[in-house]
Image 1 (tube, rainbow, N blue to C red):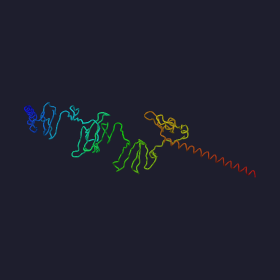
Image 2 (image 1 turned 60 degrees about the vertical axis):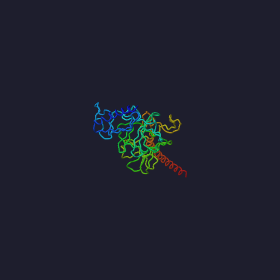
Image 3 (image 1 turned 120 degrees about the vertical axis):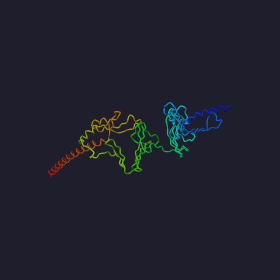
Image 4 (image 1 turned 90 degrees about the vertical axis):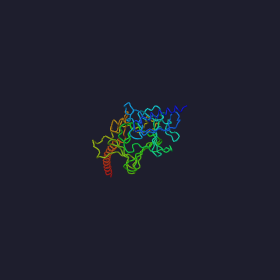
Length: 348
């Protein structure tokens, strides 16, 4: 009873698909089916090139709506894989909604790019909650525990995150965070083989280290900065006279220092109440404003190392006083010795 119906369907589809191909002459459409095929489906559909929709916008289906190259497909509109309502030219829905796992049965990727005959694959997916995010994972198609490197612009070019016009190899417009137990960031020099600088932060603090016994670590701010020489235990500041225009000598070191309050204190924001020792920035600002700066929140910051010159000057001034007093003492002592000598002579 169903044979005439199936035959009519097949006849209609063959006429619908094959007749335009005959008119176009340069197209070939082959349909193979096995009767009775249920619901009019076919074993496979083969064509040299395929155009779907009015691609050139002339409101008619002509050879201009078919790709030029053999094996190409030209589609007007969106294509959905796993979805009936694609919102982009190509939209794919994965089998699961989550992050990539190590289970081969999970198949959570929405899109996969394969390395041809290799086992290297690049999976794309998304997670809808907790929080919603998208992901990219390079791995082995037969073993999801084998992760591969992900390369961005391996031949050159810049990468921007939050930036539409990156000017560097990696430019981030926003905050960069490294979240792990022992966060480590390593910079390797391309011009000096094997030379690296490492930034590490763990529960003991933040460290900067490098693997060379002959190179310095420098922190430069505009024309100033400090250097930690190889093997050194303290920072060195730029102080070469050839780099300076000397304005005036520093004087009145004692006067500048004697009004400063030296105190023990604790920071109000320090819940541990750690006892500290220091000065008050407002006191220093009155006598040595060059050592005080104002931060973005309006609070005063004190550069303690810039108090060293007035301390040295105060010591020099006090030393001058001591030497002058010593000369007086020596003179008084000489006079006293002379008087005592006269008295001894008179007593004889």
